[in-house]
Image (cartoon, rainbow, N blue to C red; front, side):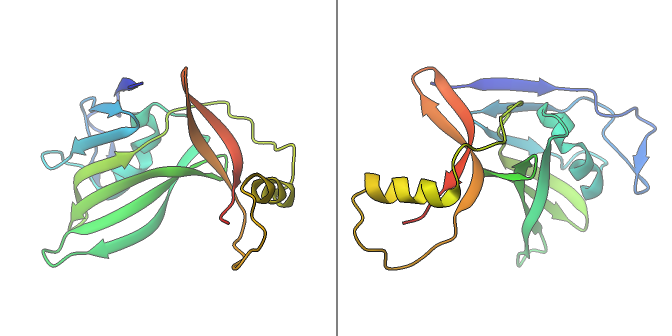
Amino acid sequence: PTKSSSVNHKIMSPDTKIGGIEVLSKKPKIEITNGSFYLSLAQEDVSNDAVLTKMTEWFGISSDHEFKKVSETIDALGFTHANFQQFYNGFLVDGYLVMLHSKEDKPMYLNGRVAQFEDVKTNLTITGEEAKSIALKYLNVTEVINEYSIETVVVNIPNLDGEQIKLTYKIRV
């Protein structure tokens, strides 16, 4: 099923400044379809820091969510491409990454995938090792060649009713 939502929030008053640069005075409209979005900031007088400060508000998610920079590259044209991983209450949200494309600290585009949810239980009833044992048995694995770390992540699980967000173990076998 396709899930679409439109986030339309007041950002800040026109005279508000962050880092000496005026931030957006109008409400940005971000269309999020199946978690994916695209936003042009090329015509806005806003800094990278201002964008990063307001992302959770723009996406309509609580302060339980945060975005942490995981990588940054500069291409041959001088554009900086910074990737931000989404986290919920300190847990990585698997598969949800936001990319900020800028030039000389001037944001040009923001795109990626954002998970919009609240109130996910963050306690697990089994250990990571128990989950690994269950996975190995389910997959009929008789020999493990490489050992990988067990990650605790928030995932989006598609089902007949749309989707379900859960905290789970990510196990690589």
